[in-house]
Length: 190
Picture (tube, one colour):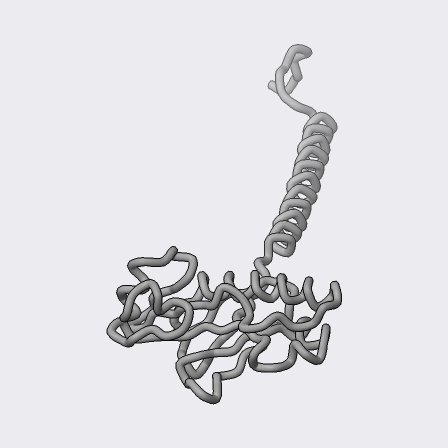
């Protein structure tokens, strides 16, 4: 009963241990590669999220009127309500005011005026019709914005030129462009 045959199949204890060691090594390498890849993916995802963060939007807000406009320019915009007309805002920039003392007067500031549809328009736009709705129908869309019950009209330039230095002329041109952009982007405050 008890003799072993020479061609008996099967594994010896050493062969079984050797196969077990190979499986453990392959498993360990696989685990290392898997964890390394996940760490790299997480680092890349964090980097992408950090680099695609959208900067907060800055606004020029005319709180008395409940309107605002997104503004990304480099000028520091300032406004005051016209003391003689609460439906007119006088706009300027800190850079324009600093460029020349003559640029710090109300007559040197840019203006946005709001009207109800049936209000009579005054000033340079009055030649385009009587009421705000009529004027809006006769001028380019770039000259006004309609929000809620109001038409907002901008002046085409400052009431009076201020300063003669190159710095004040440049600041005046940049401020005029900024005011035009603000007028076009006005929206109700949400």
